[in-house]
Length: 197
Length: 57
Image 1 (cartoon, one colour):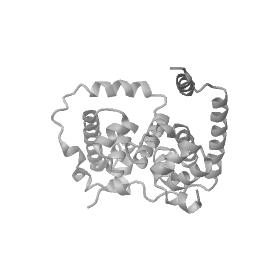
Image 2: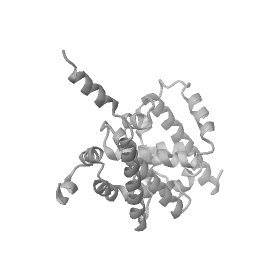
Image 3: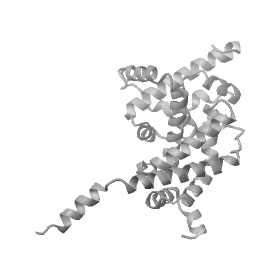
């Protein structure tokens, strides 16, 4: 395959070629396409540049090993977003993983029938200021931060979120609704007296 | 007003130059290990297929 031909491949075709041949040169092309995105997402969860570098390095290594598990059900970029966030969240919560697991089970028991499509709306965020939103995002749990970013920054649909997080669509809606409510509440408190809650 | 989530990661950070060589080094090592592992393992699916195909009817 010529260099031009490789650069013209879609992400999905490139991934297929990497899985088939295990060619590290092809993986390099994938790295060039996504290094910026992965690094910046890791940076959002890391304490400084060094941690962001380590996280990015780990993400790409794991991506190479797990690439065959990408079945092409969603866009590759969607899969990679979720993969990156999952790795970051696992890293941040490595000592508290059990606690969060318990919490997430209890949330599924709540009545989910009444959650409409309003979870997709961004009206609640429109008056928020970016700098303050950044601060408040640090006051919610990493899982909540992940689902909010996937939905409202990366524009994943409920279906894509369900596939990426391997949970049901109603569970996605429930988690989104709760994370959103918590964020709005924390933001209101934060801006009321100008300090964290 | 637009969705503030779109600007939450701005300004974007530049990826450190040295990271690429570190990542590619990791990948080369992983590839080597995966190939060695493959060398010492049986491909069960292939064995079953070749046995059943060669069996006399």
